[in-house]
Image (cartoon, rainbow, N blue to C red; front, side):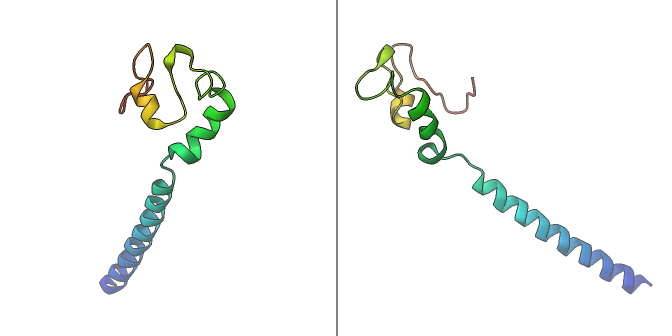
Length: 83
């Protein structure tokens, strides 16, 4: 009886670890990428006024580096600050 319990327990642990590792892989893929995820939104909504031809507030939104540098009001993005 104890051997059977031990076998079932070990089987459940292996299944749990396998499920946890699959979830961890999904989380790694979910990390946003500026070029892939953010820039396309900026191109349709923001670049017209904050791009190569026009830079309202001296803010260029075409690169992550430009957003970190910011414009007249300072940096558009601050790492670690969602606001």
